[in-house]
Image 1: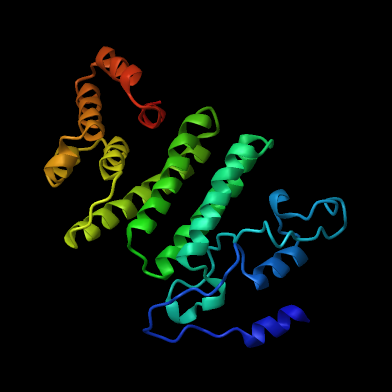
Image 2: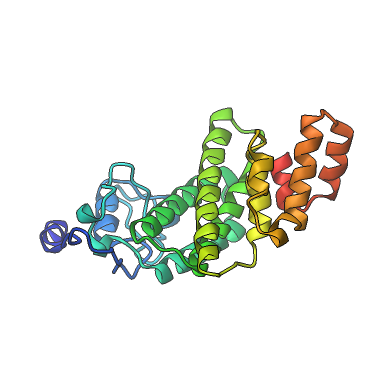
Length: 259
């Protein structure tokens, strides 16, 4: 009955108006009740003490919005009360990052939960057309998660690694556009060089050199970009001795990608 009432009272975002999310929790109320009734809660979202009940109860404080493929992709079909504003998204990212550090569950289980919720977060940012420094920092955190996962799950099935790489590349593509758009307004972010380097390490095609030539001088000459170029050249020349020397010298996240 409560779900039916929420469905009647939810308003659609007016067409052609920039959507601003109004959901002040990590998961919209309507979704929490729907997933509880549909037995679609993650173990990380179940209220302690109800795990073995026929219908486990949702922990309203810890539930996080799930990624949905079937949801509409245009603002006019999206309810503002189902979209979280940037400050709530930032809080949710920090909660998920902390979960990675504190959970005693197998890494694969935590990865599946956090990766899905990060994907939903990126979608909420996209709905609201957010492009600012805080948004960049948020996407950088999510990108680091996918890079570390490449290393931690290197012995997993190929399809799992492929899916993770796909999400990593999408994150890096978004960052590429963010950096370029902010630069047009004269705004430069602290970690751009680092993530440009990661971007190069996921390509290794004929466009690598061309992409580098479009960077600002300080980005092009940075440690991360120059290291990525050295790795690219070593691979192109089949110089594996040089590759492994660079691997030993590389920062942790770069080494994760090289692995």
